[in-house]
Length: 252
Image 1 (cartoon, one colour):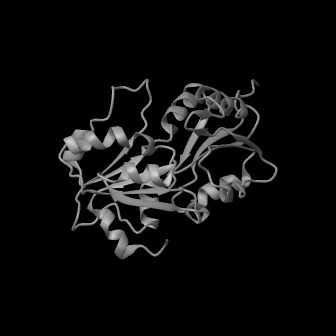
Image 2 (tube, one colour; image 1 turned 90 degrees about the vertical axis):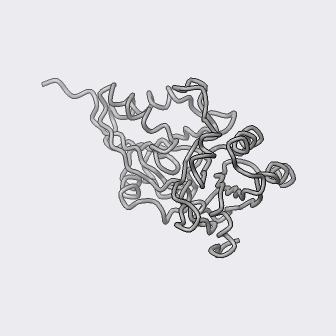
Image 3 (cartoon, rainbow, N blue to C red; image 1 turned 120 degrees about the vertical axis):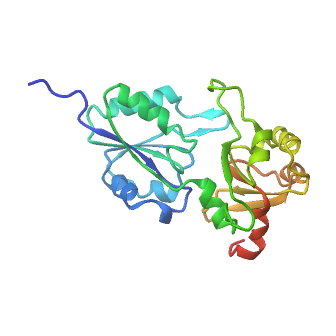
């Protein structure tokens, strides 16, 4: 009888934004029993520490301008590991399907004949603002929130985000990976009807012990970033809900 090509299964696990207490029970169980874990740069050290000590660990992290492992090689690695390892975990910061390339990886693995399962995680676009005392929705301030990437792939299905349309259609905007592009994004938001005094919060390393915030307006924030040498990774929250921070924040 011919043996199946793949003995294992790949689990796309969302690690959440950083606080290990926000990792799902299912995600934690898989890490504790994994044979191989391929993890991203945004996964916190506390969550890495949960991984089965006998598991093979591979850092496939990507940062601005630095890729530990190209995307195609990451997917190929997962495929190869599934040939001999029963539990292969692809560990991603936040949620695999929210700007995490999980959909791409899952499609490629399924095409190759590998069994795949997704384990959702809490996305930083919700958790980081919450830890900063900013609810992304509040019935007195907004009836819509838009989650959008500020760092687009060059091979995308269309040329770019319509920032003016987003400014016109959503009272709250949460931008992933957009700190370095705010000088280009903000003028388009203003052209879409937002005002210079619109509040904005930048939250770096959200939910972790070293979480930091930078609070300003669309008029001041670019200068504040330069003055504070504020660096990615960070989430940007734009809208009146940011003003609730002074009331709801219990942290620094």
